[in-house]
Length: 444
Image (cartoon, rainbow, N blue to C red; front, side, top):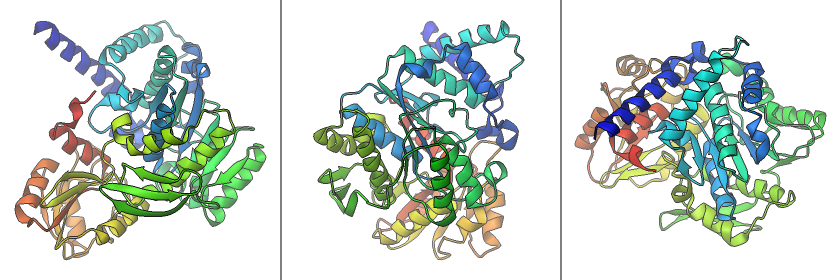
């Protein structure tokens, strides 16, 4: 018992170093963001360029990149590959960010790696001061090399061109879609944001775009031409021809893969599945072993294979309780469309937002007749429940404020009838605290 307690304290100290001793955008916002790749290249060199030991698929985009990464990783895993998966942010456990074949990196590896990293930095006179994300990116790259993965699916953290993961040369780049997000870092227009995302397109390496229109499409085509990269738009010749909900799954009819049952049931996943299938078609031409039956298994068992949480996730019945990770206007638009199609007598919304998001645009989407329970994540980036309550009241949306999401959900459940529907969302950090409280953080 004493050893277990000491290991727990050591783990807490390790996380404290990563979170609180290093600048971290996820917790601090702008003060934790540092654009540029010089530090990432320096760390990469310090660790012997570990990403060169395996094949890589790089994914950027405004919405859907996490789901796309997990579905692609699941399909490749079912095809027999050893697959590394690097995503952010985590929901219940830091170790979710770094996985091999769905299993989270061990605490022992993280603790030892951070210990060795500190020693390396003491003996380094370069003067670099890496951020949280720069550190964990090279940690993931190094872990995948040590585990001898065949392929790694790497999700960008913020943007693309200057994201710390963008030191790699992938077999394939994927950009899911573009919407307004993080304008203080990426630009005020869709064109400017598209330019930043297009930065992951590499010379001579193919790129798949999930969806792009107008000037955004022009940006991607121009960058692909400049980089001599073959570009494919998944929307132009879609693999998915129809979809419907059947027996708790999303059933999709496809051109090349027959009927595909996807374990992720959000309507917005149709576009992500189309992007993944288009990417798999490209990977076939890059000598990846893509097997039809394995692809079916990859979609059917994506949650089991990768332990993905928080995507149109059912938390209870009577009343039906759903949580989702949508946290910007494009994502919330898709959520609201699906909520209208779900059977219910009355809607109840448990909501919390990060203060740097376009909260006004999202609040305008909610029906004023619903029940509202405002809450906040326990981070300085979060808008306080009281401030959110006041902001909502200014446009005619009224509800009570709660200091923690669990209290807000309790109140919603007490007010709802069995035929009502409760939705929890607005921020991945709100979901993280709820799922942790519900015990989802204890899985391997």
